[in-house]
Image (tube, rainbow, N blue to C red; front, side, top):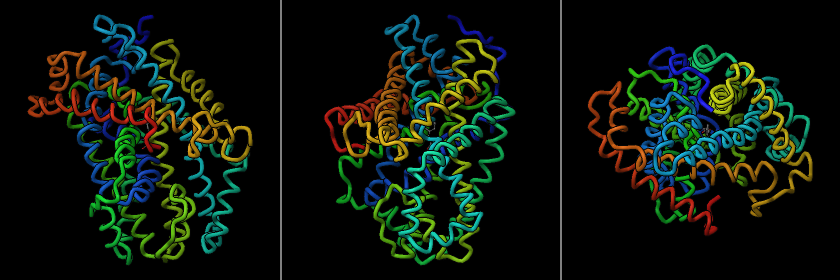
Length: 468
Ligand code: PHE
């Protein structure tokens, strides 16, 4: 099985910013806007944020550089990249398994991520039609509304399919005309909406308290589980461990500097996660709101507070549009990994690959959509046996974020750090960059810090530590 696509015909980003926009689009998503604020809240703020920042710098950034390096060096997706480079080295073709794991992970994550992304569409409609306001004035009614929405099989399926349709619609048009163009429009809009919201919350009474909560570390709040959660989340939020960054790197020009581009993406992703926290906590602290279930802050708490502010309709509509955009540029990258696998490995035309792979993920994803209360049998399946892993959705999310991504990232770090030679790495990283003064630091982090830290996650999950 050789690569069907000629190397010199591989698509490339149309501009220098193409990679950065698309990769930042992939990284910034529900992980930043939905998950990070609520896990920060659960873990008591400051100290958790500090560990998370440490994980991004010491583990996330080095692995991000390694992934992009693999993609650009081989001009292939994860399966092709590992097959090509693994071939004549220790481990041989077995390395191809890392690529296959990546494609499977992309399939799995997209199948449930798109369900949550669909909720944002429901909320946009709700906000714009004026129906969110009355619900938001009655928190109990909003809770009930959200619960009923989750267990409505038709609505869950409908919004999931609409979101998948939008994702397929973009990937269908390819790297430059589809993905890059979407990112070029959506990312600046997203950043502007976020900036407008930050500017708005600066004037709210809870702003100072929010800053203190986010930035003043209180180590007595930090648990072992929290440390591991911060580390695991750094993979999810940076889209690492499954070949998304590798695939986007394979479209990168040789003139672009990999370290600079990768670090820019890490910085943007972190900045946006922190901005999301500032917005949400300022609003929450302004109203002394008691949070009962933190994982639904985005859908059951925020609307209540949005409508206590002047201009609630506009703010809430803008906010959910922002979340939907962020999610879309992430789902695009998930589908691209799976679709480009079919393009590269089976020689399918892009349109066919996008429709068939996107269609299969959409169909499979219906199981997730129905497992939130809509179909009892699907909500009851619990292979892992923890309360948070109940249902098809819970099981898949647990497997993907706690196992597949960290294991994938661990193997990528081992492969680039230990199997590829120092010279090979140096050569690829200096192409488009010039002399890389930080090469030694990068290589050290990749060979030691990253595998040790990720190894710690894996071992602790095996030992059943409180890592969800
Ligand atoms: N990084 C995305 C987010 O934070 C999720 C994602 C994970 C996207 C893995 C692609 C690959 O929402």
